[in-house]
Amino acid sequence: MEAGEGKKRFLKQSVSDPDSGDNGRMVCSTQDDLPFFLKPSVENFYTLVTSTALDRETRSEYNITITVTDLGTPRLKTEHNITVLVSDVNDNAPAFTQTSYTLFVRENNSPALHIGGVSATDRDAGANAQVTYSLLPPHDPQLPLASLVSINADNGQLFALRALDYEALRVLEFGVRAADRGSPALSSQALVRVLVLDANDNSPFVLYPLQNGSAPCTELVPRAAEPGYLVSKVVAVDGDSGQNAWLSYQLLKATEPGLFSVWAHNGEVRTARLLGERDAAKHRLLVQVRDNGEPPLSASVTLHVLLVDGFSQPYLPLPEAAADAAQADPLTVYLVIALASVSSLFLFSVLAFVAVRLCKRDRSASLGGSSMPEGHFPGHLVDISGTGTLSQSYQYEVCLMGGSGTSDFKFLKPIVPKFLAQCEERVSEASSSFRDSFEFIKN
Image (tube, rainbow, N blue to C red; front, side, top):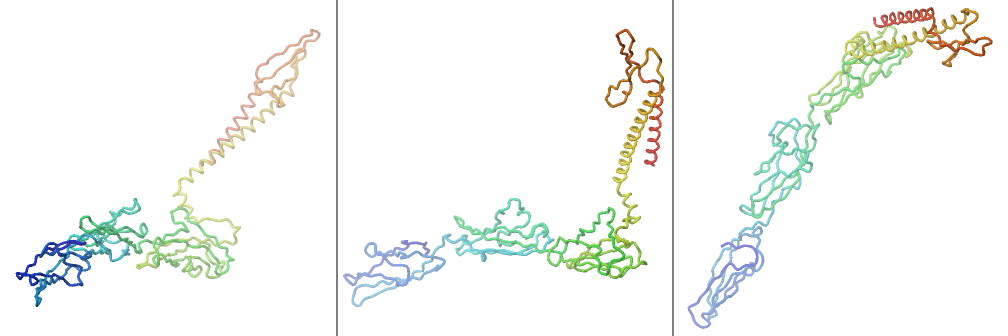
């Protein structure tokens, strides 16, 4: 017999005694330590009723002994055993073994890699205790959770769907839901944190000196420098973390071994001894930068060092470097051509200005030394521009007639042909000088 939870009547039983009088009258009873009692209904009929709510998860089975005793002398009795099975209702939600789980996976993992699992149990029975697992939507809608991890609905095991990159995603947090198959279904949630472990998959990257194919930077070192003089410093970074990002520096090759040294922990390049006159002026150093990963990854950088007598000495780039830079950067050629054009235009403007000034001076001289005829003669030359000189193309003549009381104002023709010829000659000379200068700059 099965019974549900709560105060319920679930058994009705009749008893009888063929005797008469008190010998046929009966009393029924059960154990006192059970949550049941017998309730009389009509004559010789009893109902087994629960006295408190039953909890199947606490006790799922009861063995009840019903004792029937008559009132005769001597009293006779009989016993009847009943087994009560408490049926289940879905009153328990699945419970995770932990409220949160922390799992680890190394970056660059193979797809479908098992990274761990979650577990939940349900105290109910049957379908009410069958648990299924699912992923909850992430808080960040931009996180493509469905493309990163999946969960087995039956056992809660988690399989990364693709290779994870530590530099792009270091921590992946999401929720997991465990639900039973009861009606209505009950569920609970747990937090899962997947920590991506760093792998040494990034080589050191040199920030200084730049190695981008342009003209190399040359460090100047005075020949009077003391040992330990700071020549330069190699600056590098590593995209990894932990010991995979610990960098060390080493001088692999030098034009003159023993002249320079590199500090292993900070990349400083210093002189190792006093410099002498016999030391070459140009030096090339090859420095290696290596991380502390397993296996270690490295990068190399080239430094150019120029020994000078003093910092007032002009910096002379390495010939081979200058030639490479001229070939590799056509923009420099265009800039030189543009600069030459602007310089030529400026020179032409200066020459033209000088020619005009000379023309004006010659014109003034020729007008000042000319003789005028008697009678009707040119009067004062009028300056209509206000600059103290005649206008470029025209002059005015005032003629006074004696005794007539009148005067004539004549508008003369353009400047005399001799003056125009002189100006044309000056401009021609300036143009010829400009062409010669431009051909020289262009070549």
